[in-house]
Amino acid sequence: MIDVRNYPFLGQRNQKQELEQLKKENYSRIYSHEAAHKAAAGSLGGPIVIEYNPQGIPVSGHVSIKIPTLNKANPDETIAQAKQVRRAALAPGSDLSDADLNVARQAQSILSEAQNFKRDNSKQGETLDIIG
Image (cartoon, rainbow, N blue to C red; front, side, top):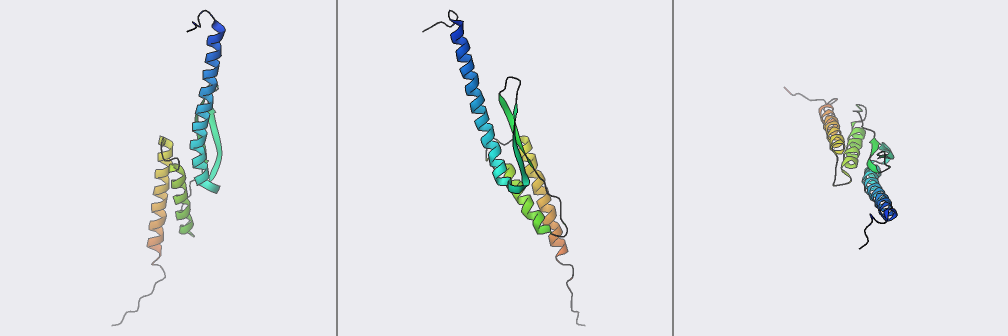
């Protein structure tokens, strides 16, 4: 076994190799996670953004996802978009962040709102024949 204290350049080389390996592994893991969000988000998703610490190590990432609002003229569109956003937030399937879970909850809330609106307004315009 070589004592790197006697050969400081060996220790530096190993540290550089380890740092580069850490950068590659973190980038790959983060990018894969964010790519799952982006793929499921489709047209509602923005670009993948990877964030780095001062040493250049990837530490986190995100994909902006457009959260729908209730479209009263077309609640079915809102329902479809809310389902897509929820799928996108949960797409990686594991290692979900608090932000991922928060977006999924927001999408579920909008989905419920749109479904309730559609149900409540589906009765408008119905007529009743009263025989008496």
